[in-house]
Length: 283
Ligand code: AMP
Ligand code: ZN
Ligand code: FE
Ligand code: FE
Image (cartoon, rainbow, N blue to C red; front, side, top):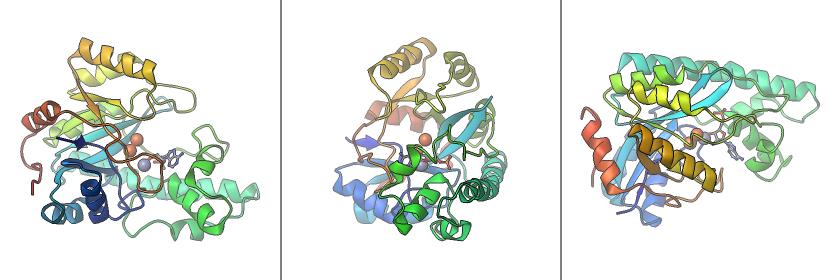
């Protein structure tokens, strides 16, 4: 059984509509895929409709952007109730904050002479989608200023760029509590990826574990051998389960569906811990 628990669609910064992510999942030989768009459940309905057609099971999920002390933390929430007021309130607030944040980043870029306008960036954000830095990169690609999103993230759009502006994001411990309150299961996404030179201390992950965190995403392309070893040791010490996934973004990132996978045993644990309001959708 091939299980990939972290992908993005055009509901956030992936490049394919949810149904196409499902089709690509079948083509990649996956049996189970999780759709985990940033701060939104917008893509769930379309992905659910594609389950039977593609013969791939769907774990409905979300990737919540969190922040503590200037460090960015991504939290995966699986099988949450999309109507739970606490979680819905936080992600709605974050999505709204992302709009003015994007406008401010573009204004800084314009002031520095980069040939881009806010209208051109907005034209890259699909209707209803969570806006993010990749949409600025898409506007630059569309204009021919750069050839791929990667080039923008290497400099102008990086976390330590002079153009970087943050946005409202919940505290990671609070976000874990909200996922649990929504009947879902929380997994710390790519915990050891550096943002602006920093990684989260083990103590914060331990704090999240005490708040109900279920697992850590150890097998991810942005984790080197040392990060994987650190993740495995931390998981063993704190009783967290271990996942692996691609963090697929269509053509927006080089990540390939199924390049890292999660075991069926861990998927069973995720289903056991969830309340059942939002079950895994099977063909
Ligand atoms: P934001 O949520 O607006 O802060 O933007 C962060 C998003 O940018 C994350 O989802 C990343 O997947 C994406 N991202 C980071 N680096 C790159 C890159 N090199 N190429 C494409 N997307 C990237
Ligand atoms: Zn993304
Ligand atoms: Fe992430
Ligand atoms: Fe992601």
